[in-house]
Structure formats: C-alpha cells, structure tokens
Image: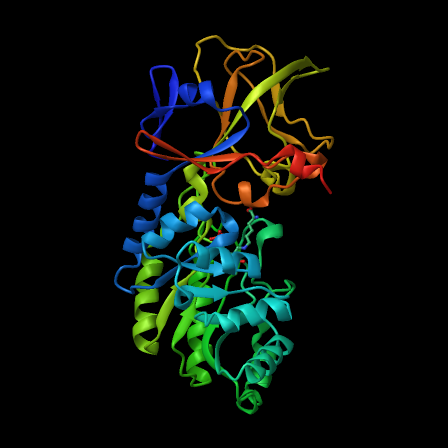
Length: 409
Ligand code: LLP
C-alpha cells in the first residue's frame, strides 16, 4: 500500500510510526489506513466510471462498523450475506436501497428483515428460496425485488476453496434450472425478477474468467429476452500478495461492461471486497519467544490463527515485515508461528531475514480483507483491537474483547 513506508528504520502507516503507537497499544492488533481505503474505492469507481455502477462493498471481507461508515460516506452500498451484516450495513448509514443480500441458505428470519427494510435486491440462489421470499412477501403484503444468482460454470482459476462459479460449487442456480424455473415465476405474484447476479470466486488475477462470465450472461439475457433493471457482476478482483503476482488489469473488462450495460439498458452492480480493503491493513504482533528447532528457529508470535486464519485456511502467503529495521542478518532459517494449539497456526518460513529478538515487533501485511472478519475465539482468545489511522489521527474502531465477558459462557 502507498500509505505504508519506512522512515529511516521505522515503519509508518500514513503519518504515524508503529513504534510510537506500540508505546500505548498492546499487541496483537489490526491497524488500517483510512486514506488507502478511500484511494482504493475511488480507483475502482474510476475504472468503471463510464458505466457508473453501484459498488456494493462485500461486508464479509471486513465488517467493522467504522470501515463500513467510511465506505458508506464515499457512496458505497453493501453486499451482505447474513441478517447481522445487513443490520450492520444499515447501522453504518448505508441506505437500504444500496444493499444486496447474497447467500445460499438465508433463513426466514433474515429474509423477513430484508423484506421489512426494503433493501434493493435479495439475490436468490435456489427455487425454494424464491418461493419462500414470495410467501413471506405475501404475508407482509409487499412486492419484493429479487435477483437470481446464476452459476455460469466458469472456472475462475483461483484457489479451489474460493472458487464459486463452477457447476460443482453450491452457489447460484444452473442456467438449465433457471430456464425451467422462469416458466413458472409469473405465478409468484409477490416477487419481481429485477436482476441476475453472478460471483465466480475470489482473488482472481486474470481478466479472462470475468470476460467469459460476461459473455455467458449477455447471451442468456438476450436469448431469454429478459428485461432487467440490474445485472450484478459480483466481486472477486484479486490483489498482489507477492511481488511476483501481476495485478489484474480491468481496463479492457471495463469497456466490455460499459457496452454490456448500454446494450441491455441495465444498471451494473459490483460487489468488491478484497480489492477495496485487502491492502489497507496490517496485523501487528510481538515476538513472544524464540525457540531452536531441528532445522529452523521458531519465532513464536502473540498473534495466532484465531486472529488471522488465511495462512491456515488457504496456505495464503502474507509478507511479514519488521516494525523496526536493522542491518544484521539471522543465519538460520526461521518460521513465524502463533501460540494456538494447531500445527497450522503458522505464518511463513523465511531465510536471510533480519536478526530477530524476543520482544521485537513485526507486521503481517495485506490483512485488511478476510483478516478480522474471519477471526474467532478459538482457544478462548479474545478478539483483538482494531485501529484506523487517518494522517496523524488514530481511532480505535474496535476495543479488544473483554476477557471476563468471554469466559462468562
Ligand atoms: N460477492 C459474493 C457473493 C461473495 O461471495 C464474495 C466473496 C464477494 C462478493 C467478495 O469477493 P472479493 O471481491 O472479496 O473477492 N475468505 C476467503 C475469501 C472468500 C470470499 C467469499 N466470497 C479468503 O480469505 O481468501
């Protein structure tokens, strides 16, 4: 991120040195750059400016209330996947008419909230869900705008655990089933099919799967002569976690989206998460102990897999950088690990790292997306603090969870 740099030997986020923040704040904690969030959002908006889409931030990537507020103020809507996320988006000031609700297993209770709050779209993922929305809407005497999420059977060429657009994935309805369902949809008087949606996966670094999905959608909408208000093209835009990865170039895709939206005369919706928030956050942690192993040294951090799951869950690589640089090299191979009692509680092996001592501080990078939002109380560890930086201002946007409350049930 542009808002992260070393000044001399010390790591700064915006105008504040982490070393100074550490004088008052105990580790581990998440810290985000507000200006990086703003930059990322405006960059995304600018890429698609000719289409002028509704950008519904995927709240699952980071559902901190204050982060949702920052994005809401920039004009973002929200893509939510639970009643909790829906209520949080509203609490953050995001208008109901900018909220879309995705997910394969929405409950009756969650659907009632969505209907009562008059959100923009409930993106149904099965025939049964659409029928349930219809019957709930009937009871509530409403006509509800729905989208239908399709499974376009496109390979997003990403990690198998975050691929969602292939026939084998549980998400969306196959085109075949959708066509059959369409024949009877008119009998459901309390819903109106206003949109189609797709989301083929996450951390996609190549524009080809997006282009392919767009052509599948275009053909389908034309063939079926659907008259839609919206087409929701989902999220999934990848970011660079290593220097080797090439950033996705969305310029060509944006031209295709522009033509698509003009021809079909519909408003485009996007649901980006990672590309807006991924590179804006760091996880700051302390080296608790160092232990010699058979062929490497274990650098035992105070942050664990409960605080940050991505390496354990997807073997994800997140560069670990020192909070204060030195010029000495450690000769041994080192592995950063956490305290949680699982072998997968580890964050990466390094050679030729700078000399590391107990009580040093490090930063795990690019943890803004699916970092805090995926964290848990595993091992009865409290959720950690979150801090938002804007220039030289620091704001607590989540306090560390209270241990006494945590042990009360
Ligand atoms: N829309 C829908 C319907 C989704 O399911 C998702 C993400 C998004 C939008 C946002 O996708 P993004 O722009 O962030 O790629 N925990 C995993 C990622 C799971 C993504 C789930 N769906 C990870 O840490 O990589």
